[in-house]
Each structure stands twice: as structure tokens, then as C-alpha cells.
Image (cartoon, rainbow, N blue to C red; front, side, top):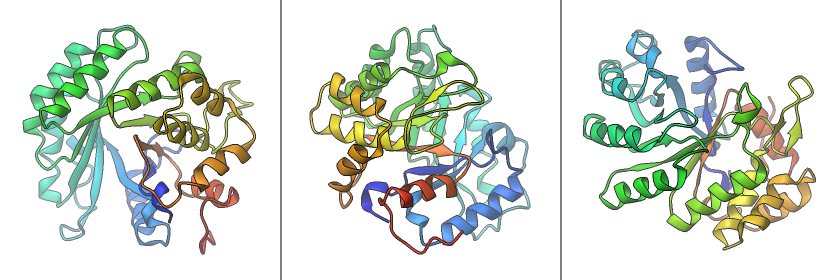
Length: 285
């Protein structure tokens, strides 16, 4: 697996639209972790509500060393309570991710609350504050940068899709965010809507989805110093060739800025990456 793609896809099998039962998601995740493409795969993402309900109990061998990411679907303040259920099961939370504000709300109070809790999140290597792409965004990014300067392992997370049109940022909006993170040396994660490698129209919903190959190329361009207009152009492309060309030139280098995204399927993005020629291997699923 090329270094550029390491950890690109977190395993979000229990989340829509896949919505797998947790036992099935765990079984599949173990297979992914043992497969030749394991370096592509990040942690299994689990809602905090399921963790706090003890859904993992009895499903994990304490010596297994399972690593997960906890999604704060019950809010910022409930994260420490949910994480307290992991240790008895021998599970490690590598990262936590939580929305700190709704669309139109000031994200700074939510960030402040999350920062107050970071000492109560033992063993967590990364905290992702999900920010709405509306009011107060740049100030929120500055607050995250300030916290990182104080040693807090916090970064940004943005929504790139969902069940409503307003949850899909335009290419210019997403390019602006990518460049803003670039200017601040701030890592970011994305969630929702990245179902295929290349930008496309979903005929069932009528929503145009961002492609993760577009985002990868756009992030590489931003890291190279390109401006918002050039980055946005890469996000609009439906021809995969320029995207592949830019990524191929950087396959042996670690991915800058973009931590990755969650997908309810691991094999679908893997298949796309193989078809684009960005991954070569013994894929036979």
C-alpha cells in the first residue's frame, strides 16, 4: 500500500448507509486488519452511545488489541463516560470525534468544552472537533491551532455530505477550508458523502458528491501552495486522469494535512483505487 494512502479510510461499517450490526462489523474489521490492504484501513468507528451501552462486552478478546475511534453521537460532555467502558474490554480508543456546534451556532463554546475534557480522555491520540462550515469557522480553526500549540492533540473535522443539500459544501467552500487548514498547518478529517473516488451525481438523491480522489489531489495541490481557485478546480473534475497524475507523483510520500475519511465500506474505495491504478495488489474480493 503506497505511503500516500496509509490510513486513508476509517472503517465506518456500523454507520449509514451500511448500518452493519456491531458483531458483523467487528468480524469484517478483523478481516480487513489481516488483509494485504490493511495499511489502507484506519480504526473501526463506533458511536459513543453503543460503547456506553456495553455493546462491545463479550465481543472482544481482551488480548486482541482492538483499536477503535469513538464518535460522540451523545455530545461532548458524555465522551469520558463512554470511554470508561472500553478498558475492561481491552479496547483502545485511538481517536474521538464529536460535533462542537450545529449549523449556524458559534463553535467556540463547544471547542472550549471539548478542550476542558481532553485530560479525561486517557490514551486518546487524536481529538477531532467537527465544525459546521458556517458562522465562526475561521475563529474556530484559530482556536484549534492555539490548543495544538499548547500540546493538545486536537484537529478539525468537516462534513462533506449527508441527507440534506446544505450538508454538501460547494467546491469553493471546501477548497477554502482546505487552504485555511494549510495556512495553519492544521490536520483535518472528513465525513459523509465520499462514496466514490471521483465527483459524481447520485441519481437517487440528486446530490452531487465529492470524490475522495478529488479531495486527495486538491489537498496535495494546497500543500504545494496552490490557491483556492486551483484547489477548487480539482474538486470539480469528473475526469480522473488529472487527479491520478497528481497523486501518482506523490505515492511514496506521507499524505499531508488530510487525515482521511470514514466509509461504511472498505472494499468499495479499495476497488476504485485499484481501478485508478493507485493501488496494485492481490485484491480478489
